[in-house]
Length: 147
Length: 326
Ligand code: SF4
Ligand code: SF4
Ligand code: SF4
Picture 1: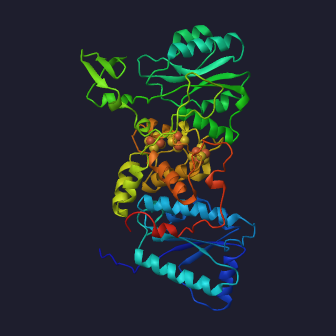
Picture 2 (picture 1 turned 90 degrees about the vertical axis):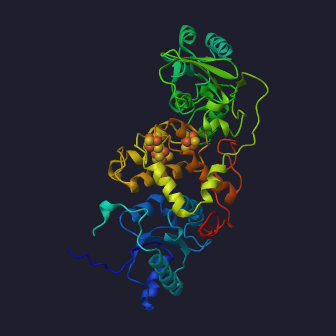
Picture 3 (picture 1 turned 60 degrees about the vertical axis):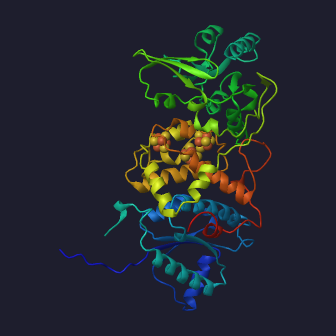
């Protein structure tokens, strides 16, 4: 039997805040800016809605990278949500690194509703990083892999 | 010390200050001691014990006990008092229903370490001050220096201070002490990611998901735990693969971040000897470094770092720059 090696196509999950980055992604779309189709956007009401478990679950279900996008500090729709998110994600990422999971696989970016350009650029650079890291092996769940 | 504790407990029972006593109960051997509640002077005389093996933290029991009828007397070691203070802060215990006597502790003993010296069938352990005299059913008689078999968590003790009490068994109160509890974390941080990954795989893959670490933890007092959620797919079951092992430990450590007093119970009870304190201490170390020194349970008025923020906190991208090999 011959095993064909397919080129690596990353799967990226982006948690986007409804009030800013999600609209930023929209703007990127209406401006016809390109960003890779590997990015799957999940809309959340606020960046601080993102529970560490969401991120681990995304990895379990086959994500190779997870990015969280929220409003710039100071601009949160709920005033302070992103400040809490910032602390949580810092600690979580640090813990993942401590367990030996590549640090590049997780990222936080602040993207406002007016920053379609930034959204597209962020996604392009994140996909590039993930491509260089390759497939997520350290936080994978083989039972959830289709191939 | 034990005799003075029993005498004082009897006095408080007799004058009606309390109607029961939280302490430790004798087992079949010197070393198998369990937390228990005593109701009468006779029970105290018969079963109450407090020796070097009474390592169990009783604060968590007080969550339920303090909600029962009447006041309960509790003997708290310094580390237990931190846990109790943290539970007070989270409004999990009713302070007015607990009468606390602070007891000093010079470090508790790890029975496993005595056994690890190749001794089996231990039937008696006598306390000779600086060392133990161990007798086995096979007729062996060995002297073991106490310091060598002390619990790891006690060797790295953070404080001898009792932070919450109604009276102290022994004046004066102890102090916060110099310790090296973050050394091991720093050693891991200095490794390469591959080495760290191998280290943690080796440790975490031994987990049998007995949930002992969660059940004993004074910070894990949720009425409904995420790991009891039927829909989660990870409810009370052995981890099926490496992902579930990692997930359980990351999530549990994350849930207690900022609330964990570093009492060391989780590592003490783990039947697989997984160094869980290294996960908790990593969070504590990070929080100290990034958000300022904080000790859970030490001060009732400060805000825990995870429910607080500053406008100029560092960005999560610091993780890419700081600490350890890339
Ligand atoms: S006590 Fe040890 S073996 Fe049991 S669930 Fe916790 S880490 Fe796993
Ligand atoms: S996580 Fe471990 S050290 Fe921290 S409070 Fe719970 S049992 Fe104690
Ligand atoms: S693991 Fe989390 S949810 Fe479960 S008892 Fe501990 S803190 Fe609560």
